[in-house]
Each structure stands twice: as C-alpha cells, then as structure tokens.
Length: 231
Image (cartoon, rainbow, N blue to C red; front, side, top):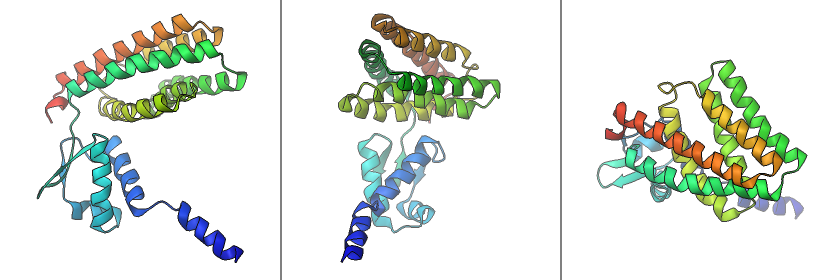
C-alpha cells in the first residue's frame, strides 16, 4: 500500500509533458538558440523535443501568454523579436520595481548570511570579467537582480519582475559581445551592496534606479545600431 502511495505521489509531482515542453522551449528562446524573428512548425519543435505535437502546441500557448512567441495559423510558432520599444517599456517597469526592491531590502536590514549570498553574486561578476567570460558574467548579473527582488519576500513583486527579467536577460545575451566590458555595472552593484549593508534605503533606491536607466539606454542603443529591433 505504501509503495502505491509513493508511486502516486511521484507521478503527481512529475512535470507534465506540456510543462516540460514549455520549460525547454523557454530556455531555448531566452538563450537565443531559437533566434528572435525565426519561425518554426509545431512538427519541427516536437521532433526537436522528442515529443508529440499536442504538448508542444500547449506549451507554445503558455509562452505566447508570456510574450515570447506568437502562434500563427498555418505558419507555426513565431519567436518574437527583441523590439527596442519593448525593451523601453520593460526597463521602465523594472527600473521602478527594482528600485523599490532595493529600498525595501535596505530598509528591512539583511542578515549576515543574506548579505554574503548577495555579495557572492558580485564576486562572481568580478571574477567573470577577470576571466573574460561574459556569459558567466551575464548569469551572475541575472542572479544578483533576481536575488535582490527575492529578498523582499514580496511574492507579487517577485513574479512580475521575474517575467520581465527573463526578457532582459535574452536581450543581454544577444548584445553581450558588442557592448563595452561591464566594469561600470560591477561598480554599480558594489555601491548598491554597500548602501544595503549600511541600511541606507534612499541611497540604495537611487543607485539602483540610475543603474537600470543607464542599462536601458545602452541596451536600446545597441538594439537600434545593430538592427536587432528589425528582425
């Protein structure tokens, strides 16, 4: 009886084919393995994932709701391009929400363990630049921003920011090797960390707000200069 109960529990916890398909396709889109502006038939994606077309179609509908793809009758799944205007709007939202997160985290005060966890992502960013590994830098940068929001404990804030951060990360990977080395970004993160450690909430909010505005301006300039917004 216990064996049956254990099996039922394992089945219940196992991700569905649709969930797995959505996770795999999402990762391929965010890493630009499925390129912005490309079009893919459901059968092609199903063969790529080793699944039937039904979970792939259902997964595409999930990703469409997240703004990553567009379902086109008779043409399959269209990977939405990185529009400069989209990035403008996304950064406007992230700038205010993440500045709020920085304020709340600094105001609440972080434990030694939390501070160590946040600083570890900065150390990884700095080490990645020293090793000229920009992809590792991008992963550490993403972790820093996500961790900062997670530390607020605000589930609604976490959910909203996570969705938009994924799209920013996608654009970041696309422009990773055509942007200047992000030494200034690392310095910004260090300064923000110091403000949080001191509990200086107003400074933390302003520093992070300015950091996101500068990141937005650079990202949009790169997308426009290199024609990615026209894909």
